[in-house]
Every structure is written in structure tokens, then in C-alpha cells.
Amino acid sequence: MDKLQQLSVFRRVVETGNITRAARDLAMSQPSVSRIIGELEGRLGVPLLLRSPRGLSATEAGQAFHAEAVRILEQLDEAEATVRGAQASLAGPVRIACVATFFNQVLLPWLRDFLLANPGIQLDARLDPRPVDLIGEGIDLAVRFGPIREQSLIVRRLGRIDFSLFASPAYLQRAGMPQTPEALAEHEFCRLTIGRANSLLTLDGPDGRTVTLETHGHFSADSVDSTHAAARAGLGIALLAPWGVMEEVEAGLLVPVLPGWRAEPRDVHAVWPGSRGLPRRVRAVLDVLVEKAKAEPRLRAR
Image (cartoon, rainbow, N blue to C red; front, side, top):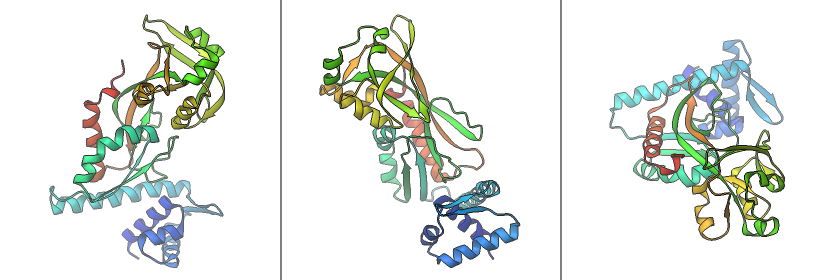
């Protein structure tokens, strides 16, 4: 059995979590894919996949082997591209993970001309509000906010973004406009939850003063898009990026609350698995993000 074929089949099975889907993607029969996986596990002498009614997932050994399989296959792709010449056209899938709002409003406009100029690139955007397992889900590149704690990732800082408070006119008419940060304790918040509710809010004022307070509210979500929509619907105050709601502020759908007070800026990073090199097509996408970020005023927090 061709070892490279085994690596390719195993990689696709892990990344789809499904034998049938992997077989379809590889233009192979389902029994052939199952046989190749069985022969691979037999040759290595360890189970690589956990099988359950919900699908397939990699064992600890399978995760390590998957990372090495990806590295080997991508190095082969790079070697072939080198032989064909540096001017060979970019082609192949690029899987990028990001929250939907930032991807739609920032990354997609950045990448538009690049994608039009490189029709062989197949961009697959995974718009999950929570950080995903880059290796386990086959993600090539991700854009994340705040500190990056995974030591297995390579990090490239793109910039920083500010966050401010906004609410709808209907909510402010009902609850009143807070005049001081301390008054926010009496207001409803549309809170963002990633794993658990974040009830503490720290704001920096124009005079250098910092205030930390406990927030409460009847609405929370693990998506900025949802807290944004809830604030627009009049359910409370939300912490949002000012440039992301500019049109709604101009249209009178949202109103700044305590202008001049902002939450601590958050760093924006491009990250990718350190266990493998970047294929040329992924490096090209990263280069676009880095260059566009340098000239992006929305990533220059005060």
C-alpha cells in the first residue's frame, strides 16, 4: 500500500470525521477508505480513530500522527511547487477560522482582490464564535482576539481594536442614559459569553480614570453578532467595536453610551499550528492579512 495514499486518506478522514464524506471528497469507495485506515492502524500497531454513533475522532496517537501527516503532505506540495517554479499559480484549499463579524467586515474585503487574482485558491471560512482546534479540524490559519495561551501555535500580531458601549434609542428611552460609569450597575447588559458569563466590565476614561463594575442582564450569547443584534433590539447595553456599528449609529439605530469611555483594547492575532510549515498558498493569504493590517485604521486602538 502506498504510504502517501494512507497519509492522504487518514488526513481527510480526521478532518471530516466521517468515512463516507472522506470517500466522497477523495473520489473513492467507502469500503476502500475503511480498508486503508484498517491497514494503516494495523501497520502502526495502535488505534488512530475512535468510532462512535456521532462519528469519528482521533485518538491521542491519531492526533499526533495527523499533525505529522499534514506536515509531510504539505512539504511534498511545497517541493512540487518549487520544482514547477516560483511563478506557478497558487492553488488549493485554505481553511481560515474567525468570528463572523470580523471576517465579513474586515478580512473578506482585504482578501477580495487576492482571491480574484488567484482563482485556484479555495477559501473555506469557518466562522465559529469560539476558538477551534486548529489541528483537529484541519484549519490552516485563524484570526483571534486577546491573549493567545496555546504554546503550540505560532502568533503574528495584526493590531488592536477598541470596544465601546452602545444601546438602542428604545432601551435608553425606557431605562435612561447613564451619566457616569457607576450608573451602569443599574442597567441591563447584552453579555458575551465564551465558556462562561463575563460579568465584570473594566472601562478606561478620558481623564485616565479606570472603573470596574459588575454587570447583569437577561440576555447573553457566545457570538458578538448576537449581542449586537440584542442591543439593537432594545434588550440592553452591549460592548461593541465602534467601527463595526458606525452605519447604525449614523442611522440612529444605536447610540453611544458614555462616549469617551472604552474597554481595554484587545490585540488581534493571526495564528497557525507550529507543528507544520505554512504551504505557499496559506503563506500568501497570511501575507495579505499582514500587509492590509498595517494600513488599517480600525486596528489602531487609541
